[in-house]
Length: 230
Image (cartoon, rainbow, N blue to C red):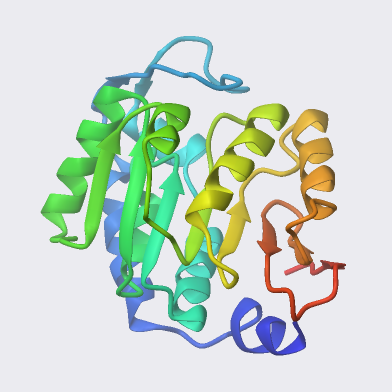
């Protein structure tokens, strides 16, 4: 854990991929395309309607620069090959993880959002990204024989649903799979879910990054909770 913190989480190196990530973000920064959102989760704290500009989704609902860079570093540090992402949005986090060279399967429940993200992936030639339009539970129930090295849960924002997704994803994991949960302090409900998952029988180590949570399954690691403020 000390090595992970020093060489990955607090890594101050400037990777060339960061500039590519910046260009991807800039490509939607002033995009005024309006998308209809079909929200199957806890809804938005900002938006009152289901119609949202792409530029506003970037501002309020997408991974910020710091978080995207961390996702890239985690994929790069652990040399992950297969990633499952629940919650594509407009693809900021997807793009960041794909720059590590990993194959990404990303799930988005809102058709117009998924179609827009897919167009961005094609525009930036992300040929290792598989974009799927589906509700999370419907996708997970039909997955057999596939395992992922990293599973990123970033959608729904409901505590019980997050726990259900984690349990469903266990069948897609192996002993070295890393789970990343976003927005663990989005609500008391989400924070309670995070606390429960840290004590899950299959979880050994957990790291609280004060917005994002990491869960590890490696039996070599004693069950222990870490808090790291970046």
